[in-house]
Image 1 (tube, one colour):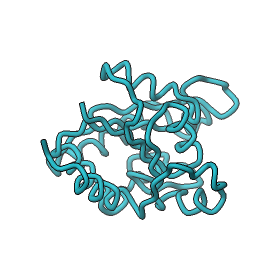
Image 2 (cartoon, one colour):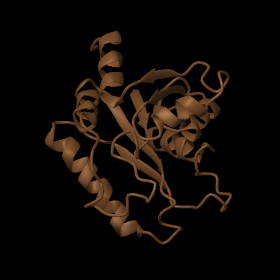
Image 3 (cartoon, rainbow, N blue to C red):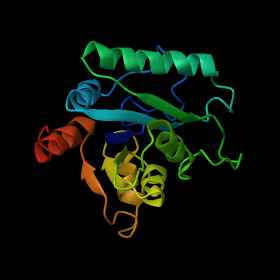
Length: 184
């Protein structure tokens, strides 16, 4: 199975310091939806792993989050692709849960759902939490400059960026990945 894990806010859709709180506020980053569809058409199983502490903070509920995810999945389907699973942590940073990135609980859920090991799988994110989660789970960390990517790049140490590939956006990464791994 060719599986790829994507963060949501800042990778697929535009991020906001005030949180993306509704379907109306959820706006795809140009090229991201098409990139996911390309992955799907190339035989990749696409999973999304996202911290959504806006739920625990009372900014939105799980129904609104489900509507945002449905919009995202519908847009990908309209381009001929599919997101096979969306895994989210609803907890806040002080809840000490196992699913909030940089902990690897979401990755473990993905491994269980798809009956696979995430070791060496690409994990595309825009934050230091994403990179740390990817490394702790044995994934191959990929940083995009969208969302918090530029800040992450500027504030991360050389050690934190060791083994991390950096791309301008998800579309650029997907184009590079698919060019490097021809269809089977």
